[in-house]
Length: 243
Ligand SMILES: NC(=O)c1ccc[n+]([C@@H]2O[C@H](COP(=O)([O-])OP(=O)(O)OC[C@H]3O[C@@H](n4cnc5c(N)ncnc54)[C@H](OP(=O)(O)O)[C@@H]3O)[C@@H](O)[C@H]2O)c1
Figure 1: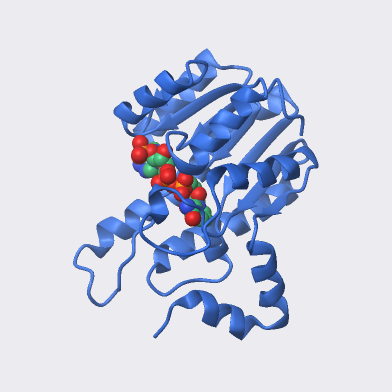
Figure 2: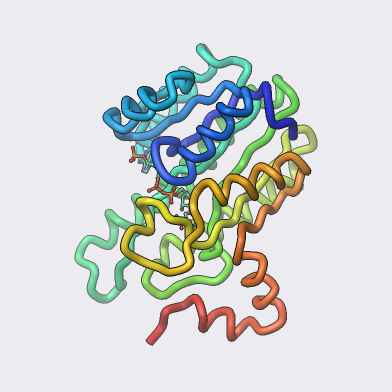
């Protein structure tokens, strides 16, 4: 994929990985539109990056997704890259969590259903514009799960397989998957060691994107996937966090 002169929609572009991607693509001379839930955060990003276009959208609400799609079609008809990045992770135990349904459904809606809806709605525009790509942000936890985030891990495994199957289906739109391990963002505040920065992730992502590397394993994920092939039980033990 070319790295400039694209029109790119990034979901969850107000913090962490999405914000770092937005900054990088702006510096590379692309039109960047970010969509996220909090209007305050969108305003703050607009102040920081005046070139960015912002759209308020709660991706857990189908009506908001329809509005987002309509706005993009009307105002940014040259869209050729969709980056499904927004995500949430909740940690809970199925035996003790009181609000399991709300949390699980929220994770599924934002992490899995929203990317599928956006893909379905925006694919005709992407195909029409050509030189098109869909980038889905999954996680190492979609390959090797951890005990306290079963639904999150399930959504990321779903995004992995969805991306792969869609790649088989589509001839003209390229389907990328970015597979990060721990990145230092709001999502991972207060947990984990050896995190990389969002900018380090973006360095690797951009290299893979430019070379049409469709599965972009970031940092330690390369080692994890190798370990998963040669010693799967060990990989599970390292990540699972089981007692
Ligand atoms: N950080 C890691 O270690 C790590 C590792 C592997 C994969 N990932 C994946 O990377 C992606 C980005 O995560 P991050 O670490 O950068 O997280 P983050 O800093 O918490 O950012 C999450 C982004 O998603 C948006 N978002 C959340 N709920 C939304 C909703 N209902 N509607 C619209 N936007 C919503 C947030 O905007 P609002 O605040 O406005 O809601 C924010 O912009 C996620 O898919 C995550 O699963 C992260």
